Length: 243
Image 1: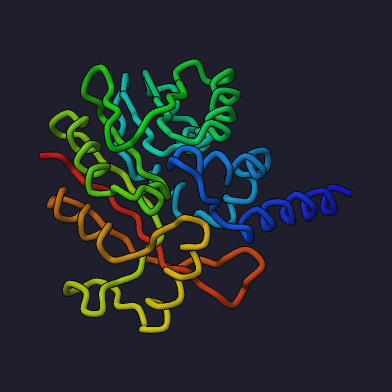
Image 2: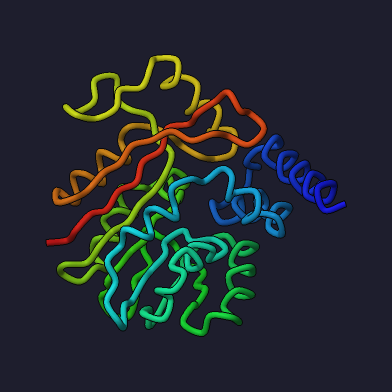
């Protein structure tokens, strides 16, 4: 019975994704219309789609009293990836424009008093004091003004702070030395596949992170896609240090 219920929930999410990102007056309205039908099952389905979050968060150094901002953090699920290190976090602010997903974050905050859901624009919102960590988890590909989001994230970090990012991407035709070079078909296919749902894959966003944080660690990998076992989508994990 549970498997049947899970399959029905997946079908509901897949239907919403098949309909794609709707037209609306503002980006916030588009996000709300797209994610509202999926919100209840968002975390369960995305666990099988959004890979690398657990490994990324495990790699973030934390000291007691850490202040963390999760830009485009949606439901606040990333907080749970800190596991036993949650006690080190003094404040964890989830900033997003999508009201239906933020409602899930507010529900999660009832079990995590340091978690606060904030409806705000990742390109402009600023905390009341510099923070130790900024997370961009599968968010940068959904932010049209991504350059402003990177600059804003860097501005809110204290000196020595960490920007941790994980996201889908495709390489440039001629990537920098030592980086993965994706086949032409992958560079054509994945941007078109994800664009239907408002996700913009390109080589520019990762290049922008590397430029903004010259001191960084980068891992590139590929991951399976739910119900499409033969496909592997490229993604990266990025840890940038503000020196």
